[in-house]
Amino acid sequence: MTPGRILLVSAMAVIVILIALNVYYRSVQAPVWKEERAAEAQALKVTDLKEATDSEKFVWEEPVWIVKGKDKDGEDAYVWLKKDNPILLKAKDGLSKADMKQKFLESKPDADIHDINVGMLGGVPVYQIYYDRKQASITSYYYEFYKFQDGAFIITYKLPSQ
Image 1 (cartoon, rainbow, N blue to C red):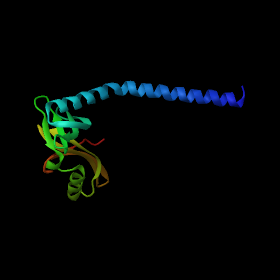
Image 2 (image 1 turned 180 degrees about the vertical axis):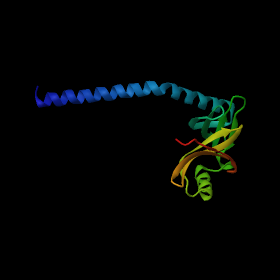
Image 3 (image 1 turned 120 degrees about the horizontal axis):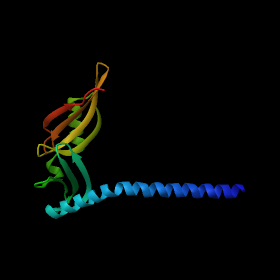
Image 4 (image 1 turned 180 degrees about the horizontal axis):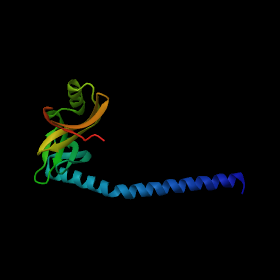
C-alpha cells in the first residue's frame, strides 16, 4: 500500500467512526429530546406561553418540567409543569440567576457554587443552589433552596461526607 492509500483508508476510518459516534449519541439522546419537545408543547398548550426557548427536567420531590420562553406579551417567562396544574411566572416577577447568585454569595462568600437551577420544592417555584464550602480543611457539599420570586431562604440539605 502506498502512503496515499494509507492516508485515504485512515481518513475514511476516522469518518466512519465519527458517523457511528454521532448515530449512537443521537439514539441515546432521542428519548430525552422527545420528552423535552413534549414538555414544551404542553407548556404552550396549557398556558399563555407563546414560544418555548428552553426546557429542563427538575427532580427533587417529584419530577417537574420547567419551560422557559416568551409569553403573549413577548416577555420572558417560566412555566413549571406539575402533575395537577402548571404555574406561569414572568421572569421579571422573580430574581434572575445572576441576582440570586449575588445574594447567595453575600451570605456565604467562601462558597464555591457548582450549579444554580430553577426548580420546585413543596409546590413553590425555587432556585436550587448546589455548592461546597471548605471549613477546617474539610469540604462539605450542600443544596440550598430559595424562593424564586424574592430569594427568601427555604432550607439547606448537607450531603454526607465521603
